Amino acid sequence: MVKKIIAFVGYNGSGKTTTAHLMREYLIKNCYTAEVKSFAEPVRYFTEKYLNINKHDNRALVEEFAQDLKMFDKQIYAKYLINNIDDNTEYIIIDDMRFEEELQAIHDWISMRGIKLIIVDTIRDIEPTAYDAARFDAFISNDVQVSVSDVEIHGINTSDDEDIFLETFDTLIAKVLDW
Image (cartoon, rainbow, N blue to C red; front, side, top):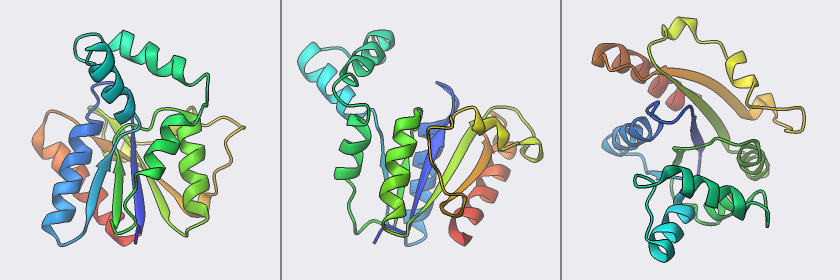
């Protein structure tokens, strides 16, 4: 049964995917079931299969294609991700939450199931103690209804300095397992 969803937010290249996979490895090594999911998974699949384009070759075109598909349904990627969650996995780690509609869809889904959502803002070279959850508030407009009891927000310093990264990663893991 899914216990928690950990969703990484942050700028391109801020370490979301790398940190998500490190978290998955840690959880599996410690006898938990964990899976990394991505809202962009169907976009990557279709652009590579039908257009022979991958995000590394032409990121701007892939992103434009993804945004254009949202004219049919703003939550198309969130619905795809939710429909592909294995209920037997304890921790679902989303490596690319970037849009309000993704947050709203995930929040609506978890609130009906008693699952907790932990949002992690990947920050480069900022002291972990300097992290301010208000930074994430810019991501949320008044249109998004998020219950504070279901959501925790944390920051992780994805610095290239391994000691700094590991310090904030260890703190994050402890919070994920304790909450």
